[in-house]
Amino acid sequence: MSGQQTVWGEEFENGCVQGCYASAFVGPNGGWTVTNTGTNGACANRWFISCAENGGVVGSCGVGCGNNETLHVGNDISCVSPNGCFFCPTGDCGAAYDASCPAGICSFCCSCNSAQTDQRAESPVINLTGITGMTLTFKYMEGGQGASDNATLWYYNGAVWAQIADMPKTVVCSGQGTWTAYSIAMPVSADNNPNVRIGFRWINNNDGSGADPSIAVDDVQITIPFSPPGTGLIVNELSNGPTGAQEYIELIVVGPPCTNVDIRNIKVDDNNGTIYNGFGTTLTGSGVALGHLRFANIAQWSAVPTGSIILLYNNTDLNPLLPPNDVNDSAPMDFRYIVPVNNAVMQGCNSSPNPASFSGYFTCAWVAGNWNYISLRNEGDAAQTRDAQGRYFHGISYGTNGQSMNNGGLDNLRISAMDHTGRVIYFNSGNYRVAANFTSALVAGNETPGAPNNAANLAFINTFACSLPIELFSFTAASLEDRVRVEWSTASETNNAVFVVERAADAQHFETVGTVPGGGNSLILRNYIFDDPRPINGVSYYRLRQIDTDGSGSVSQVVAVDRGREEPISTWLADDLLHIRGAEAGARYAVYDALGRRLFSGSVTADPHIADAPGIQPGTWLVVVVEAEGRVDRSRVLAR
Image (cartoon, rainbow, N blue to C red; front, top):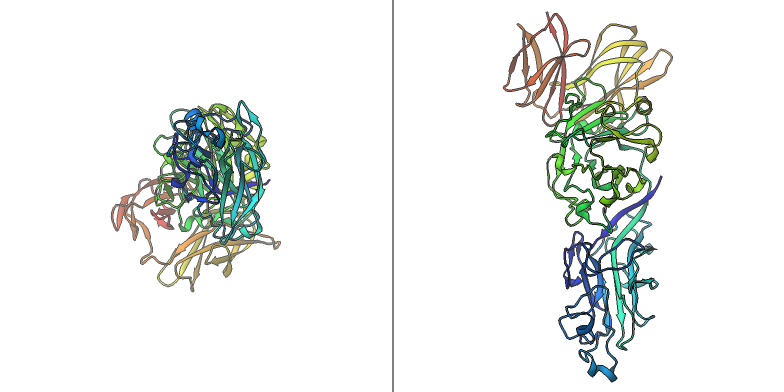
């Protein structure tokens, strides 16, 4: 599947009803300017940005002021226009220009001023560094009289301006122009060019002859061909909840099977699956929440196994089917991350996209996550993921036609045209860029937060997962004074010859640091320890490569170790009390038995923290401590 990725765009949204000069407009990309490019009369027409010429959908007739501002040429009120007192005494009546009054009869006109015009509206500088093969698109309407009253398209390469197109006149309907789509390849000199500008030039002579419209332009975009990569996060399930705002978005990590994906700074948003949402519509009515979320730049998100499920949910209105929180895949280790969006492992941007003015992803100050930044409208909205630069990866949309919903982004994944009050959308199996592979249904009996959606969905997830011929009960790595201790436990093993301990500094390029003999065939809990005597300073990553007796093998998930800690966390059980030393205040802890059942949990309040350990019987127990920055420590303790 491929589409067009927007790399720059302008919507001309300034909220102006009439009479706002284009030379004063400053959009999210910067300010526009107007340059005199030839002879201009005493009362030349002007470039305006206002809703006096409303931006309609392609194929529609031009109309008066609506709610979608455009760039257009109209008569000026700052002087006495030759015919303005007859057809537009207020000035700026949309794409309606004053063609002047012939000299012989100007005494019968409003004035004998010349309305001859030659002006170019010019964009701010567009930085296209690292981008090639671009296309410029926009919608426009144009009238005039041949080459005498005419609009042209111009391009600036950082040194000189040059005309690149003379757009054809558009069809007249109901006395006005027809909104028409236009597309042209950007000049090759725009590739990797940080100083590009585009411009629209309008000329009209002073002969008193011509026909409206003049020129109006809207929804300018520079796009590139885009085929989303095969590694990232896809939307697996999206629920509006049974009532209120009991909403969640469930994601699946996809990529080459048995690998790990760096999802740090990946964005999660609504925004209809397209970077510039609502072209030709009212942004405030098309399902765009102010702001968006991203995965925090922390170690736990740097190497997430493919096939993992990540559930993000609204913590202020809990869906009754939500499983217990498991923000670090530690309770238990099952490749399931259950995350309230206000947790420290998520971050929020509270400024972009902004439905009141623009829909792009711009630099912002990151704050705590908040569901309001991606909240879902029942009548029509979307869920999507984007990389750290804001480039689209996957998204689905839904909603009624009356809510101006688009077709679902680059993949055209608009799953349903229904109001989604009390409904859920879920992916089944196959190609996740095909709408037919998704289902829209009532929430009752169809919501499965934090779990596969059905048997077909489980089979799809298993194509990415890395399954060991062992049942791995726990796998941890902890920084000690002079080494890193890697520990793991297996509940069962089948034909397991050897474990290979591997380490990487970047979660991608692993090297062998040691081996430990496997248990062959086993149905009992087996514990293993490996000490890395030459650990890497800072954050490092460990995984297990398991080798069968026949030479085949597979790898485990990845765990991170931060050697920056001054003191490792230590835990022990004594006299029916749990002791935790070295953990920060507010850290969460949980204790599990040999079958992976959680016995009790709590929060660290002091150092050392001492808590009752109810129900502890003789045996080996797993203690998991999760700190605010995403650091996870796991240790086994022995109760006698």
